Image (cartoon, rainbow, N blue to C red; front, side, top):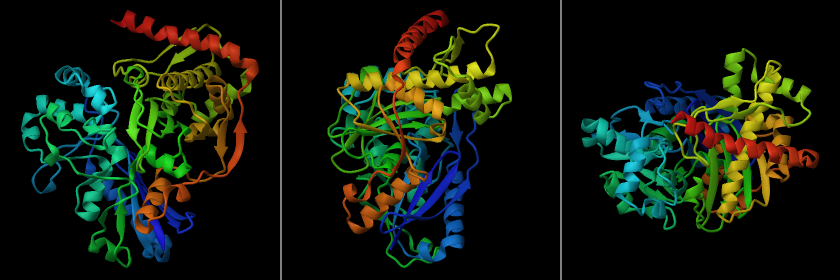
Length: 487
């Protein structure tokens, strides 16, 4: 038997095959048409692009690993969270999906919380523009004709599941990011749905991520040479899937992700919200488990931005910074290029440099960017601690984890060791495949979702701890001062 994980991203889809021992045996990917920004702060994508990329990726696997693909018995799905995919009669898509990094619904967030004062208590999260429900509130106000035609609201991977299986189903982890879920009870909340004028009839059926959600349609069983039945697991939102891939499913286990956005993730035994600190408190992809996240919107994307305006590649910038690094520099960078979630919950926040001089060069700018992202992760750790959470073990993932300097900055600022896994894919596709294995075989998550071998461990640089604490204090003072000046 083999198992297939499909990870639906905004830039493309990745498909990964594993055997019954959990070993990766083949992968393929296909690009999607990039999101568009019709107005500043908006971000949209055509759901048909995810579907086309999904078919392309799995078709490529059939060409390269046809025998292994034919042996698939379980499929798991992972996908970018929060996207509002609006379906009308006959499951027709009504408009482009409003994505996770769309900030248009900031006003609606305040209106929702005013309309239902218990919203944060039920949802365990602040109403943020990135979440799904405020997007529907925006559509209700600004596109009433489309709103009136809504029959179902699906998240991105649930839309792909619909086309694969014909069923409207969502898992608990992804549903947590809608702001319609009672996260403690792991069920839709009628009160939360009512704030946006929706009911349970508009929602997909809920399942746990490791449970069977539906069966693959016969046409795809035939297309890919499989022998049915092939079950499709509930799957997971992208970060919960990554946690399954890296084995962070037990309390206190976590990871720091330096991707386009940044995440400090920790698994919890109980539901542990901290809405004052804009902590994300969600269901995990496995039963009776929750997780918390501190989320920043521009991690490696901050270095991408610097790369665009300097004309130097990211690797060149980080290399220059590492070559001249002796400790915290004078320049400080606030990485709020797309607004910020944790801890500020401010879609209108903007990035800035301070402490520049005539001698500031691109290496020092790159160092300031990397330090700013590290300080933002330290902010996340601080508000997780305010919720009573400590992280026992932390692994690093994402493109930024290839930089030794960045990992050293993180370890020093978080004051804890960070483990770097051996080379391999421990992302959403692997986690999704593992969930597919559990759904198809009944295997226990703890036996399947193990942590990978560690290549090296990065310890805090105690010689720089005091200097970074001083710099972090200056960093924290800048946000309120700059925001006050912008008012």
